[in-house]
Length: 254
Image 1: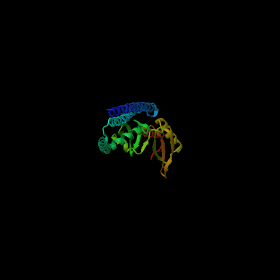
Image 2: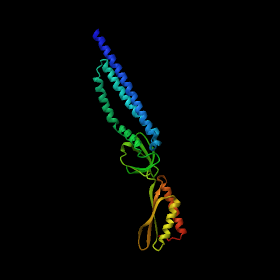
Image 3: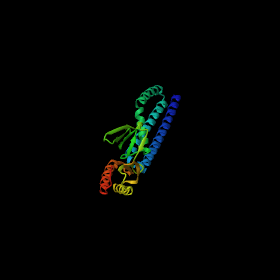
Image 4: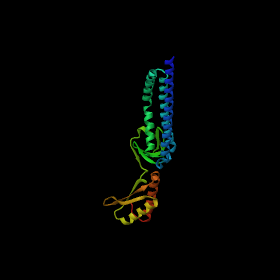
């Protein structure tokens, strides 16, 4: 009887220790997770992704909390004298099977979290991912959605995002237009027309120079920067203005 009572007391003390340890770990997980999520949400560069940052943070915190709970339950079972070896063996086999089946999903989710945390791109930016150009329409936990130049929706798994070219971070994208005029044209006058049209079209950091020439014609190249989302519209507008202003200035085109 005394031995039984002693074992019961020891088991009770172990249960109390396990309960206290579990409560402390849960508190730390909640505190650290909440602090980390708040700091990420307060970062200006990912302010537009607050809902997804919170979703990912809560998902990771839930996974950690359930893992701690399972460990605590196993410790309780062992403390009351139940052999947990068969449970561990079964859980190991099941976990291995689930791991093989869900490894791609886990990789995509983790990659999505780092895409948000590192602010590689956000919704509305023009990017090139794996050779595909498009506007970012959605950055999800598992996939990223782009709208390409033909208007098609392209869905890319976050785990497959290896190379990202962001065209929207340096203030705009480069745009160039070539104008072929007769070799007898006044280059100074044509250059002034091109610069005036570029300013009217809203191009920035413009540069005008001779791109090529021969005995019959000279090719002038106008380059500059425009907002990434307006590149096609600005290009069409620029070409229309160039044609109109050059005709008004009686510049011979070739």
